[in-house]
Length: 411
Image (cartoon, rainbow, N blue to C red):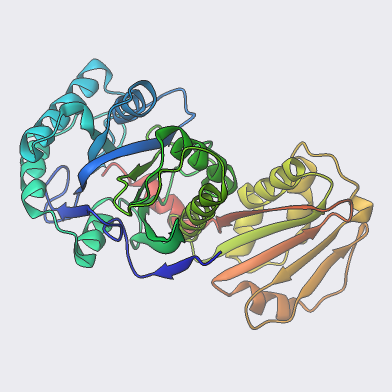
């Protein structure tokens, strides 16, 4: 399968435009609103937060994506204010935003999806929002720069935008997927992501688009964590407008498999970018659990390691405290034999270090381990020696700066 990574974002696929604008929703002179628009109607799929408390935009989008058969043409996103914990008024403001976008774009109100991120509780500044929608509609472009500006405009505490795009061939046609995502704190997805938007020009039925998304998310966005908090606003949307001209994918076949693999690659890339840019983080932590008896067990163990605050703090201090990893595995709920377990550390350009073997810690150079842990990505490998399955999870270290950012977040 020939999937090729290209430089691009949400405008990479045919027929999609984007824009970003400093609307002044909460802060002055900062990009804080984005719009993604398709020239042709799209089928849409989505996954949403599992948090019982769901922000108004989540309820709005979920209704359109899951409960209607209509097309989607646009997404409007604001940062600064989450429009969560805002009751009926919050839903009314989503409707008002969608109606303004529909008026500005010449579409129907229910063809507009909404995204918000930021502080929970305050109502939106609708003067800024409605002005932003109007300005964004007039700024839409299919340029690479427009996609990048839109990705910047959805950031909150992110230190850099997250984008990805790939191309591949289906039915003799070139198909493109492009995406952007944001998220730096309150990240612990469960069948969802922070805010993520993926566009594609493939022709595919709504049913198969949703199936593909639901199949890839558990091994990509659901395998990352920054702080163990699942947001009220987590939303991942995929829009497909059919502009590639391929025969419509309506069942599981080779074309569907090719699309699903490309979607997996894009979601994994964006997920890893998010994990590595956790609030205050200095490094990406990757945990491979290999040779497990089953995949579910491997996933539970890998996720437990990268969500362990003690492990994350040790990695911030470049301390090779492997006991914290062993402990996190032990309380994960997955059953395994610690007398048949190996733990290794790896980093680019460094020799592999084995820290634990079959029930006992192993001698290793603390100096070499400290040098390895100073790298921007450190890989933990846990060899269970019990079967053929494996899983990977991604997280980051826990730093003083994480506390500083979240202590002052509202101000």
